[in-house]
Image (cartoon, rainbow, N blue to C red):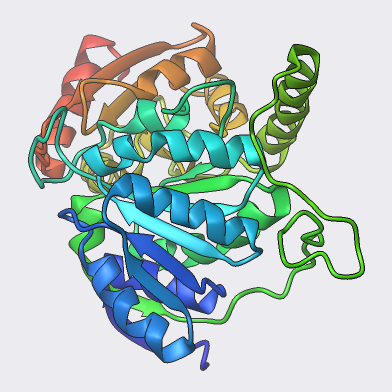
Length: 357
């Protein structure tokens, strides 16, 4: 495939094609707006590459089909949106405990409840805190462009295999529907650990078992500590972020995904008026880029967190900065999408209130 070839793609289609190029050969899902183009795309492409597409009878069935495919050593994916992801939480906990690799896509919509089909970031807590039961975490990526949706989807399959973990891609209704040019490419040829845990027939070797029921409390405790050691390794190795005009910034806006796109436009606008404002965009929501936040406290006097929610990521920003800098918040929940001009006005208001000039 020509690495320089640019193709106009919708976000949901970019996710589907990237999964195919990453070697995903099993997709299981259930319809829900605004991510329905993913199963539609996969229903066609899986047939073309000799993979399996199956619409489960429910979200619960779909996530457990992913578990079964992962246990057999197949790269598998599911996708849904907000209330559908809620139904998959038990399966996510099982995948984490079993240490099975899988990719889960959440195209976040307005909530709580059934809510609406508009873009939202109200699922941050659910994604980053592990919405299922037990002590588990999983990497969570928040792309901000269609190209990044493509690249991070491909990367997520490798991360899932490398750490034997479910990985979530957290988008939103706008990221899923927006159309942008994408440079498609084949997956990186990186060395991955052998899948010596899969159930692929026991001829010539001892049989294996994949189970999360551990009745001996001492063994269950050790399993939890084993998982914790893996999560600590992820915290050190996986954080990703982008910085924009932060070198001389007195105020830094922190936003992710669609909100970061809007915030970048606002930063450019206020910069043209002489305000020294920058942007930090977390790409991994878990593990959170704590080091980047700590670094910015040495330069900026104020952090403004902008989210398409009532405020969830701000908790991680405050934990990372440890009170060393003022953290302000502005949010638009429920599916409302702010314009860059609106965020620029909020930035200017805080700039004046904090007397940063």
